[in-house]
Image 1: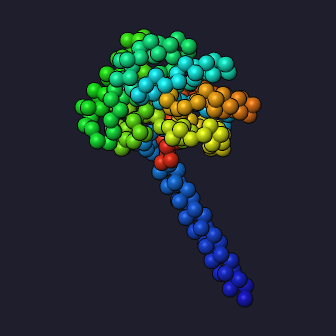
Image 2 (image 1 turned 180 degrees about the vertical axis):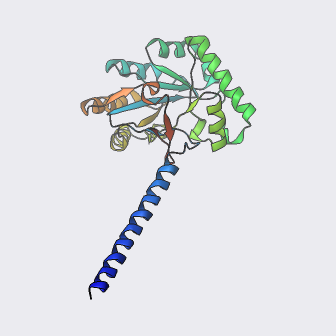
Image 3 (image 1 turned 180 degrees about the horizontal axis):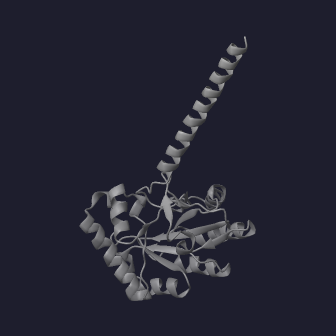
Length: 249
């Protein structure tokens, strides 16, 4: 009887040890896979701090830049503006104004093509042309790039990174480009934002000053700090997981 009990106990122990071994192996595999730097854009930053970034894409016309800048000044908030090169050609004074008021300017390509459909040579030409225009106006280099339409494949990301760019998308789309009512934009942004979020707006959005004012006021009352992207994203010792979240190693 005692021998049977001991054998039964030994089998239970072996079974439990086997389970521990399996779970440990699975856990290690998951860590290994997650820590592989994915060749995808940064959509969000992993942080426990209540810090986020407001970003504005400007592609076609001056839009409401003055209104946006006035609202940002009102709340002493700095943001990041991604500009298209052929827009810069016609709006150099606006680019200077954005820079002089303390905001950050990123590269949004020169002619707004689909980066999935052009060669590496064409990508470089698009990036180089716009970065040069930005530097000629501001005196500063830019190494932040947002692909047009937010579309870029793994090879494209890898190539842009090889040129020294951080490829940035977003995890919160205000949908202002649809010209929906401001109350829906406010609700959408407020409900979907979390620490480390990158929020997408467009300079051409109608009545942007009205909903932007409410959104910034909401975040400040909620204890959020709104930073330029270069102050939010990590510069070193990071990886990008399969969800597009930039994490510290």
